[in-house]
Image (cartoon, rainbow, N blue to C red; front, side, top):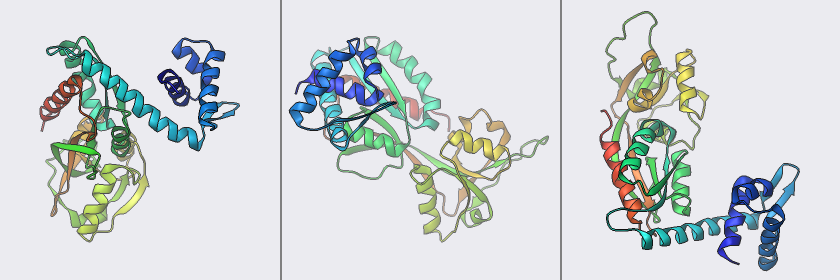
Amino acid sequence: MNLKQLEYFVHVAELGSFSKAAVVLDIAQPALSRQVRSLETELRQQLFLRNGRGVALTDAGKRLFDHSVAVLQLMAHAREDLGASRDEPVGRVTIGLPPSIGRQLTLPLIDRFKKQLPAARLAIVEGLSTHIVEWVTTGRIDIGMVYNPEAQAGLEITPLLQEALGLVSRAARGKRKPAAPPLPMKELSRYPLIVPERVHAMRRLLETQAALAGIKLDIAWEVSSVPSIIDLVCAGYGHAVLTASGVAASARSGELVVRRLTDPAPVSVLCLAVSAHKRPTPLALHAMRLLTELVRGLPA
């Protein structure tokens, strides 16, 4: 087993196809197939199931994939750490952002990265907070921004921003939006809600706070996409519970009214998450400082 075989294996697994991986890697497909077969022979395991649409990982392949990603990530970190100069970090850093904060941070982050770190490369991926936590702990990404993460031994968490939750409703058409008064949590049960699926950090936070307050929520619709939830609210299908920044990131914020929840006042916490088992490279440290500055500079 060698690093090249692991790299080839990971590309095939991620793309789900030998032909696509061969194009990306710029090698002949037969040569790629031989490398993967050699890996399977050495491990005495079938790593892929071949089908008409491409390939899928076997159970053994899934286990090797997690190990391979971690090994390749460690090698990349070693190269970057040893090759970095004191005043100009180099290499590649991968950052995971939830979609709501990604719409606000991606452009300014890339702008600052280009100006401050011209010799480095940046990759940004979006996903739910639960997925981002998994990607950080398995080494698939270097830095994650996550909402309300649970404490884990393998994760270092730094809170950056607290945001109050509010009831989001459709504004009356043709009328000036009045100042929206706060809404006591006990009244939330009167509103049919459009909420994300249970793995979404906002959904877990809302249900936990409602349970502590003895409130039974009226869940009308479950939709995983926040932009789609906002579209449904604007169409009159119900209400949502989101942060003000989540609403402000939408192009339809002018059609909505947000009432801050009180008694109790649930708060969503945006955190910076990195692996507790790996020393961050100079580039990762610089990227973490950039993220912290951008988050703390967001409008209140």
